Amino acid sequence: MMDDTAKALKTLTVLLKSSSSVQDVIKKDMTKYGVNPTEFSVLELLYSKGDQPIQYIGKKILLASSSITYVVDKLEKKEFIKRTPSATDRRVTTISISEKGTAFMQEAFPQHEKLISNLFSVLSEDEKSTLIELLKKVGYRASSFK
Image 1: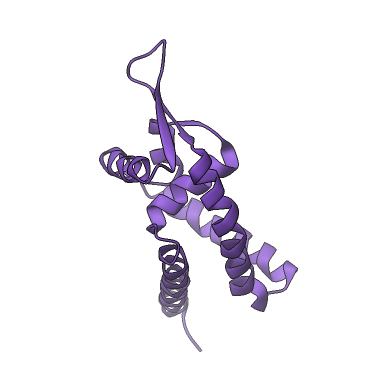
Image 2 (image 1 turned 180 degrees about the vertical axis):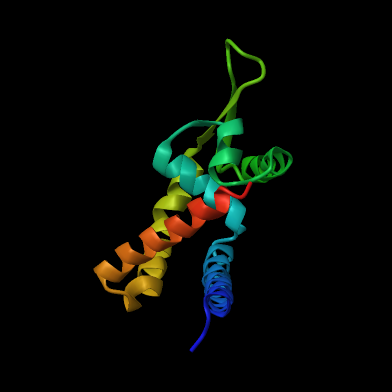
């Protein structure tokens, strides 16, 4: 029988290994569309939520502001997004998905959703709900250590 500390360490190991395996599958899927996971995340945000200030994108997908500019530059070169400077505040630039970016996401996203659905198909609906709640609980606890 494991004590609390040993069980916590085992839980962490399983969580990290599982997370790594899931991330590997997701990354492999995204790269087959010719974009990296960060680019895909930016496109997914714009596709589902609409135009976003560049500063908000970095916060939403947990990316440093220095990195977001690089990602936006790459997506702009691929003509997947457009930048629009604010007419009222020079510090704000709004990013929007282009027609080409929308067409890309209309093709890639449904396939990506199927893969994610398939990944979690080993869990019942109740298990998925429980997993969400448990992961949130641990995440909130971890954020209290900051």
